[in-house]
Length: 234
Image (tube, rainbow, N blue to C red; front, top):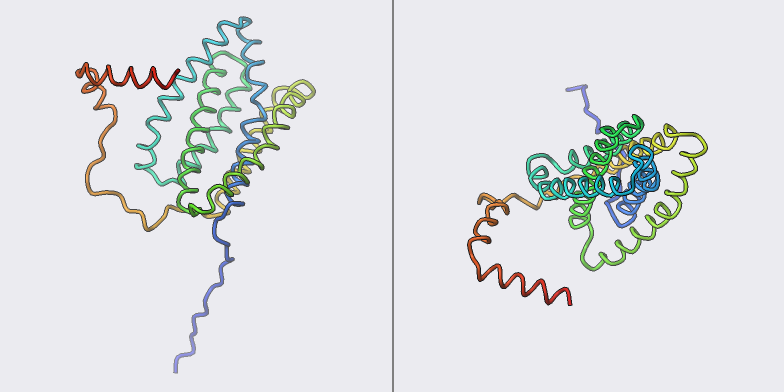
């Protein structure tokens, strides 16, 4: 008779992801972004001493950030969502490290890291929401998410200015690093994963950039687009 018995190992059970799960993630993310939202333009002006150049800097960062956002689905197809979300949290923290250098290259790198991190977090979180929240509960989930983030975007900028003026640049950006690491820990605590029922298609995805040349080569298509755009503006 065998005397060796394998007993099951009981793992801590986690409740399924619901509206509160994503509301808490979005709230902590909002604190990480909102805390220095009012500090970044002040730092940029202290470095450049010119409002027009500060506006140009924001425009450059916005255009580069838009380019990164367009290519974000390619990263998600290449890597798992959890790793893209993790990279987004780390980008927020790394951006604060660049900001504390208080130099123009550091300011530019910090703003780019902040934009890329926010893009990665936003896209992956929305994908998780579509996987775990039913259509009938979507409005309630979004309302709860916006309500929780309201506290971050209401008190976060004030907190950032208070830390920056009272304790200095390290305190303001140190708070962002703390929020980013707390977001990362909270995300891995929830153990969110890709929906196993969704399988990638067998056909090769079409690159949207390949259609730009076709669009330019068709005058009627350009004219139709201009007419539709004009009607949407008036």
